[in-house]
Image (cartoon, rainbow, N blue to C red; front, top):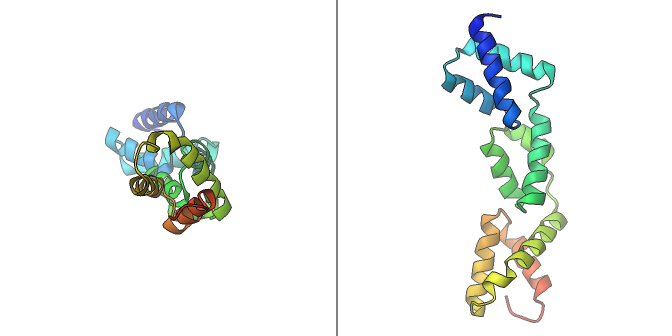
Length: 156
């Protein structure tokens, strides 16, 4: 390994010390640092073989973070993972659509949002809630289903 490759590896390890990164994120950061393509590929290969770089494990971690902590829907979790540089096939392997999970996430978000929207009149309250849930990545048909389950007596 040349001196510049050792510096590139050291920089990559420093980046990974702060948080897990995808291969694409690491490639981009090394490229911005001024490393050439051969050094980047060598460092990425070495880190992958050593177990420091694993996009599958990162995808599982990001899925858990997106759905449990951020309460994102399926589409929101997909966007969150794509922004971190994961490929579509890895995301598809990790994310499995489950409407029941989405309904539970919507219920938790409605409970969380209820206090801040109760001051609005009814049509605006529902529109505000639907917009909030759609921005979180939930599809409209699941939102409507959750709202009908929650407010059976009212017209949605």
